[in-house]
Image 1 (tube, rainbow, N blue to C red):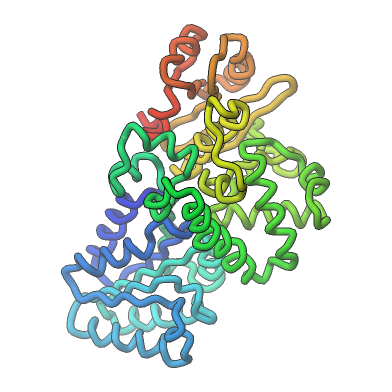
Image 2 (image 1 turned 30 degrees about the vertical axis):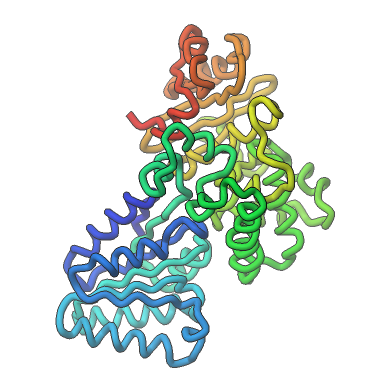
Length: 409
């Protein structure tokens, strides 16, 4: 199984490239969080396609009829019998036994050698991944459409460049929320009703593994209340109204990660990553989820510098994860580094600083650099404070520049 993790334009380009290959080819499974443009992307492919394209949504009342899926497939086959055609299925996980159904249909078009390309989307990585792993090995490629970053807001919904990075920290990157940024109540209602509740109360709770939905919701709420914090499973369990075994809480954190909501970062220890005994660092993958989970307005550097620092660190670490980088943290008392990143951007030790700081505040980064000399230390800080980090011998980027451009190159 091949996998590509990218933003809207890169995923669109990758899909168009794959759809230009000879058919029948591998199925293309597009997964990602809610409200990041999967439906828009399929509709754009259908609109611009040079071959006949059928777009259908499997999460509609009509699609619940027992004859709907086979009728839709017959129409696609009929078009493909006259030449190359595209079948674009949105929210395929709504179909009963979707993976077995799709596997059988895909094997059928390969036997018939019909030139039919199939793209299917789903909001939950775990749903798509689980079904595919069970029934579709070797038949599909997976693409992950990630949460939008500052550059996406500028390029795709025309947010002013001077505002985009800060809005990623205070309001997150869901494109559908942009029209409501100046109306706080409508903005929070949209986040709650269109994103948080469907993701937690529908997508995840329909999974067989979720036996205690109230506990799952509380684990998410705790993560949203403690962005970019290291919390032991024991501390998490002690903070929840509904008690649960540590294994259950760890499992629910993994589910939240699969649903693109929360990354539970593990401690980095060189070649050995301590997964079982080290406490996770909780990073919420879109700061809008922080804002939608509270009644108070988002913090600012002047109104609440401590909380602002947490939100800023969370946004920066989420940008690593959403950009397809492998991310951990490092801590050996009394030293700590916010992030340890590997991937296409290279190997980095990351420290996020908001407000004034001095070289003495970078001693943890210095210790990590000595321990892991293959990694390049970098400080993400307020604009105008980069020279403090550079004078200590570290690379430095302002956090707005990082949220716009990442660390590639």
